[in-house]
Length: 423
Image 1 (tube, helix red, strand yellow):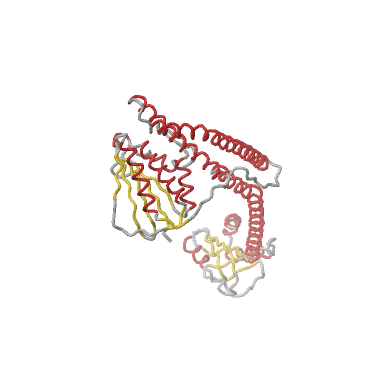
Image 2 (cartoon, helix red, strand yellow):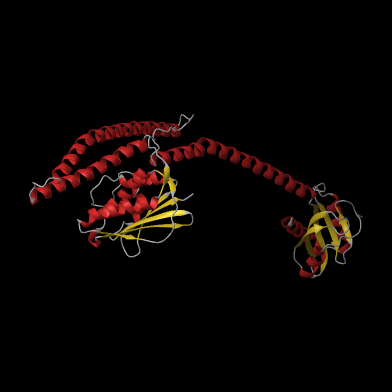
């Protein structure tokens, strides 16, 4: 509209050389023949604000009062206005261009004005179209997201969950999937892997169980005959020392075989407990004193920290608990290092019986602490053993409703803590 006002004003510059009367007559004639009167109104307004001519008729209403007219006269430039018509309240858009006479006097204003109702309707229409397009796009996004979740994220979540269980030792579980795409192929491969690992584990457990049973017979014979020979007074010192080594190592092998058998029972869920009411303090002290006399021969001090607490009897399997105590003491001996000392204590605290066994060795690397109770795990340790003693002990303590933890002691060494519920 500004461009049109400028070009029309330039066109009327030729008429400004005429008299006022001829000029005004030219304005009326041009307004009457204005072609776009159905879409836009052309107005000629005098310098004092009176309507001279309009494409809508010579005498159309009262003179307009929008600020673009006075601004065009005062600034001698094209001015515009967008807002409500003060007379009708209708939203309009107007552009006013000054008509400058040959003597430099502004003798009037050429003004284009149009209603913005159609434009507003078009804006509303465009807004509704955009809103509809946004709604359609949102629905497409929701549909595609739902499809993505159902076809990818949900199956992947199940695969991750089952893979984590397999990694934690639950072999043989299967992933249920109905897809024939890459997700389905991945699930089938994991299922096949799970079955094969389960089969291999079963073969391994059967082999360990069979081997353990086969080893127990000769070990029993070796241990029995070594005890018989040691009871004789006819052995010289060197022979007695050798037989004592045989007896000690056969006992160690017997303990390993027992751990292996217990491990296979745990894996097959065949481990059982013979529960009875037991003075666990007496059981622990007997184990410590019996084991301490054996360690004294090897130059290792087993220090029992006694206390006067009343420790209640609890329901447990005494044989299994003695096995746990011995396993932990054996581990302490293996890792005692140059400290050559082991501390043991038992106490009653917060409805739990707390048993602690500490060595003064190099301790356990921090990154290995979460793994030391896993089966067959030995980490960086160079000590002899199968790596299942702690795993078996941890399982037995858990079957009693307790907890077995390992940590590095503040002044060095490893501290093992057993917490057994007293109720």
